[in-house]
Amino acid sequence: MDLDFDIVDLPDTDHPTEGDEAPDFTRPLVSDEYWEDVSLSSLAEEDPVLLVFYPMDGAFPATYIWNELRDRDFEGSYEMTLVGLSISSPYEHNTFIDERGIDTRLFSDPQNGVAEAYDVVNDLDGMESVAEARPAVFLIDTDQTVLYSWVADEWPAFPPYDEVEEALAANCDMKPLQS
Image (cartoon, rainbow, N blue to C red; front, top):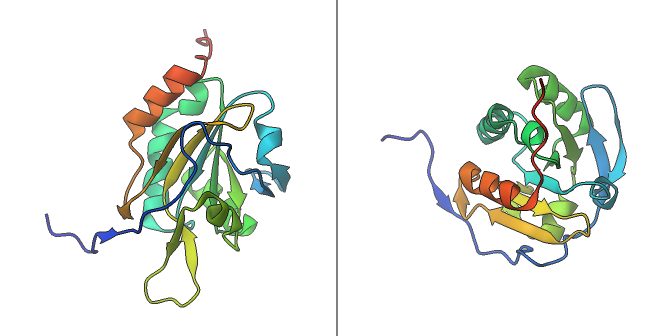
């Protein structure tokens, strides 16, 4: 297959893995209506959180990741909270949510501090001091323990969605069927 881009190997990371405590943070959490500063720990008070790091809004991997997550309807199937996180601003998130029909709230982390805390930074080629989060997925329990983690080791890469679903099935209750 002839790709219009190169596959790039990414350096190893020291990201949180199963059993580690997930770093807490507070950032603007954007919905289709508004945004407000919200902490990860407050989201995890009731149900586990599936935290999805992704490239900036508008990048083709972001579109593919959110299309797949929307189609699989993890949040509609399991008792958990699905949220995304990228360097995009709240305004960009609002546009992305609207244009892509995303029902999920997205954290805005323009300075990439959360990606640094999770060690999932992707330094962008040819751009001095410009970085974003590499694709990564963390399932975080109500006590902020990491139950599942996946971090891209090449660019571009996409989460192993079947594996994510297996982690959800093993760690989250199913939602009752709607009649």
